[in-house]
Length: 470
Image (cartoon, rainbow, N blue to C red; front, side):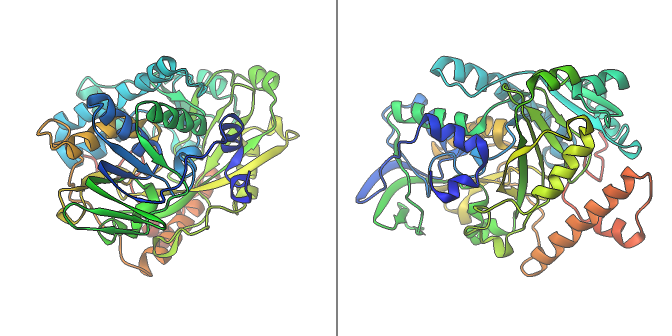
């Protein structure tokens, strides 16, 4: 294991223990029907979906490191559906299309489980639901504007819990209230990534690892250049997550920021006694979100986006180093589980995410080039989202005139983020203001006017700032 691998956390270490073999790098000039840039969830699901639809299609994936080594293998492993995004979706594409997209995102949860069973992938898949909680008085009923709208359209999957039930299910004395959605799951994301890679290879997808993109020639057909080779492809797919910001058309759609995670030593008996005994996803109601879950061997994995922004979206090795926010996240974990104060934190890591203003991905054609398809802006919610997003990618690549190529997420009129240096400076100011405001709310205190103004500029969380009237 290389030094960079150490900084990707124990998810990644577990996956490499099972599968250390690298696909060879590209060292020739070749041709393909489809070249996918990026070997994470979006690239792998898209390749598999296209090959299953047309086994004769020649699909190639290039990956700058190992498949799954980016955001796909370093996230919290929470596979949530999109009913929490319903109001944001309505603001983009209306109620009927928002419902259809949410139903597709919901179906992705079972699709992951079925896929793992069919192909013998031990991704520690557990469909035990999502607990959305309030961890201070100000957060109580923060979801009500969403659930009331869902009730209006007879689409509400959430069940309100008593305070005692919510506290018991989370195992945390800080939980004051909560709602529960049974249709969510947790996975070991790096193991899922490596399993997808294996299936893609078995289907005949050509994969080249340690093969970064050096230049994309926007010719017809486009040509993908790498350090020691090139691919002339009829269609190119940009499935690069935050790394897609190297393209000017995509850069201002997102801000590249980190989400930072820690993992404890295993204490399964104590977690079971506290009530955190299954694979439930748990979040609170902050914008600077606290999210956590347990693992089958009894660890708590706890995350929060407290780390670094990438200036001009240049990632480099920024996220391949020790987590700079580990101490702050450890303090947050201890505040939720004071009964586990003696349990050591044994791993911390960080990874980039592509945060869009509405927290929703965008799909389309790069610079209007119909042979170059992109998907970007998953905002840290890509574990399940990429499954149904691969349907959109497939339809765009195969030029299908169907419900996915015409989906409301394709060619959105997105609110663009400001150029540098304003994006970097502004993002830090807004995030710091959010942390300050939400820390004051823990004490049931109000922030000052400047702090409230800065937080009003933040990207949407689960509930948008402006509610759609239906």
